[in-house]
Length: 332
Image (cartoon, rainbow, N blue to C red; front, top):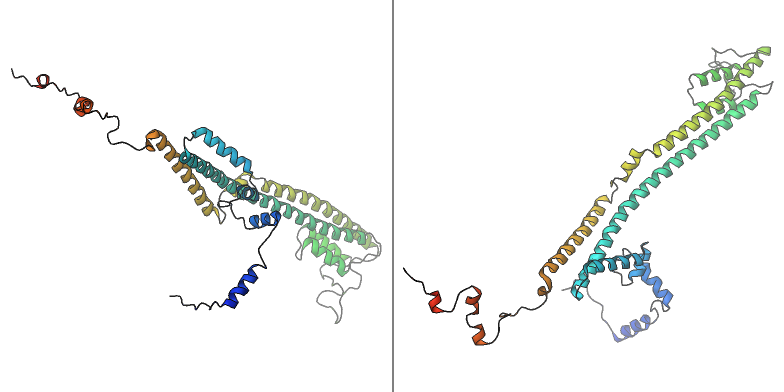
């Protein structure tokens, strides 16, 4: 008994339902019906419009028809039953090949994703290079001026290029920037209250008067050299990224079925293969049995209805003579 009480259907409700049914009958034009038929296509296995389903899946219906004809030409079915088995075998082969396409498509998508990641990393490296080159160029242009004095803008550009903890060549540039601070800049640790400018390092004395020109020239030359170093480093980085993306071992690894749906796809492939195997075995078994597998057998098939002709036919088949004298054992 249902736990949900059904509503009582009154004559008024029946009339209202019938009136509402006439308000929406779905698409009336052939184009509209075609769109509705293709709107919910999932895999096309049970679709009545086989050609449209295959096209929706990106497959060519003519290829399937050619495969069916090829299998029919191979097996030469002799009746409707064999024809149905042969057509089903062709469809099983089609699904088996579709399973291969699934695996290939996933591998291609993974390899494309690898290539896209490589290109993305290259674009990011190029963008970072342009940003650093622009900062170095601003520092070079500023250092060309005779009245140049290092400001917070130059220290900010320096940090964008070399980071907060420079070493080796960048550290030497950092020292030059400190030496080119404006004379009278307060030393770090002794900054007056309210001061917001750069602070001088106590270990790097600020260059004054005519000593500033060679320091400024050295700073500019080192900055220009770093621009060339960054350009070479970018080229090496791009080459390394492209080499990693084209590494055959990495690409072969991505071809392996390791994605989340790999197990399901392998099961589908095995299922299609078993269908092909069973249908092929069945057709071979039918061919071995021959046409007798479909024709009814008569109990006394091959035996004449003439009493005299059939009398003792079984014994005759066994090689036993009906002559009493011939079959009588003689004891010597």
